Image (tube, rainbow, N blue to C red; front, top):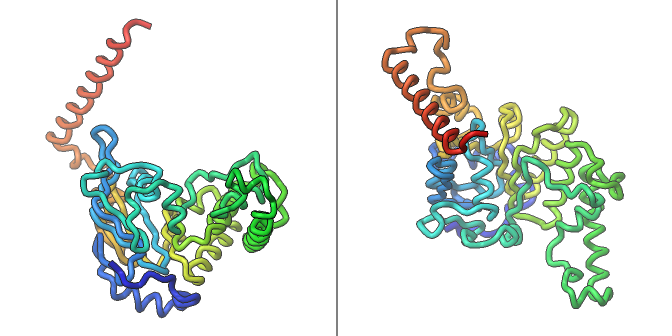
Amino acid sequence: MSDHMTQPAVGAMADPAARLALTSGFEATPGATKPDAILRVDNIVRQFGGMTAVDVQHLEVQRGLITALIGPNGAGKTTFFNLITGFDKPTTAGKGAHWEFDGRTIDKTSASSVARSGMVRTFQLTKALSAMTVIDNMMLGAQDQAGENLFKSMFRGTWGKQEKENEAKADELLARFKLLEKKHDYAGSLSGGQRKLLEMARALMSDPKMIMLDEPMAGVNPALTQSLLGHIQNLRDEGMTVLFVEHDMHVVRHISDWVAVMAEGRLVAEGSADTVMSDPAVIDAYLGAHHDTDLGDDALLTDEALEELAEEVAAEDAVRQAEEEAEGPK
């Protein structure tokens, strides 16, 4: 366990040379150890029926850096996020699954407890509450609000000052994300990109140590993409740890300090963006083992391959027929 349990000094990782000097000492292998890991994950497996969606044996996220988690669709990235943030439970819960954040074990805690520990996340599909105003969405992100206590809520003097401080903080964040003029608008009236900004700003209301972003650029126009990129880099430069899922490799190259790659639920590679993108395992994961073969080449259609294909089709037909017979006449 790391002995360093404090946030990196503000600006410590703002220097590209400092980040390169740090990451150059990392081993570019799946599950590589880090000198100051803020998040450690062991033996997280999630199965749905007979399908294994996630099987991560070991992963460490270095404090103070931007780490990208990439992989093809269906690789298990969002499911992995759900598991470590308490929104889902691993199949291996109680059977060796373990993860810790900032030195604290969180594998038996709820999503709200995980957030209170300093690890907060955004979602692939934004969770802004559309029927509430932008400022009300922001206020929900503040922690330990005295006014939420039923008894104290009857006495404004016990929570009024805190609420004013929270609103001032919310205004500052909204101004930073260029949403202040939308403060009293309903969140549902915002564009998709603005809702992404709102969700990120709301996450920062809790002063997290690490923020996890699930496809923050998805559905965002190019102008707002640049704005989001800048905000993410600023978070790192201010001492926060960022772990994000992204499909756009240009984005990954531009802002990530370290990259972890998932395929079929497993961690298959780690390294700098340039290193992993030239890794045969990563190329195969994205494009398939025959990515460099002409798919029209009949040489691929061997007798064995044709027989396997015919068996799979027959098996699928049998299952479909059995289901139809079980349902009976319509």
